[in-house]
Image (cartoon, rainbow, N blue to C red; front, side, top):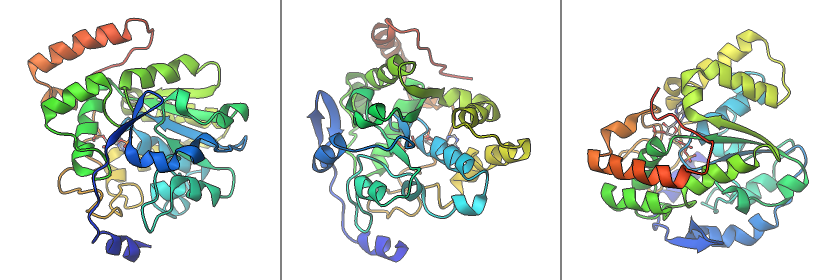
Length: 302
Ligand code: PPS
């Protein structure tokens, strides 16, 4: 598979365009997947991992996989992240099949990743009363992380300049739409469905405490030494050097990690290095308006 990936790296990847699907901005390649996504049939024991992009998806994927495999490192290194936990709405990227095809080939119980806002998630997940874990990250760090990702990922629309991207983020005109609608939509439904809503900042502050929440949610009982092992192996420093978790297997033509690494900083508060004073003021005023109706609150620093 790795050799085939390298060969595919010879083909330049065309940047996606942004389209609107049911009022949400999405990369245009999603159209080929859309009918299959809408009709997706979940099993009751499917676990959905949902995030706005760059909110800590890969981190929670690794944590969940390690919990389900009771800390067995060898099992967790059986394949790269997206093979262990396929991405529901992802297009086919030869030699990798589409997310839907990868999920169809899995043996239950399945863990599935999505970036879809709550209202676009296939109904079947809720009809089957599936569990879901949602991770949210403060908007400013999420914006910065997404900008650097969009610069290096050629499967994404061109981000333009930092200033252009700043305005696109505020207006929700980037892939998977508005950060504000996304975090709010999942928050509003968290007590109506079996949803564990986590925050990236809490995970940074006290990973063991948050990992224990996930263990409890998944109805597992793991000894303290296994929990400690999971904390260690899902730390940023270790995951950054784990080829099964750092996306180094994706060819340069898709993820140009010389532009920006997938495992970039893994920190809370990096926005301070990127938002200008003026941008920060505009951001805060706009944020107050958009989040005024919510009890949901985020920490921009620890
Ligand atoms: S994606 O493409 O949406 O799946 O990306 P996602 O995994 O959601 O987000 C990538 C950011 O998460 C950081 N990351 C981590 N932070 C802390 N600890 C761990 N273990 C960890 N793993 C990944 C990663 O560095 C990206 O954030 P930035 O701020 O860009 O560094």
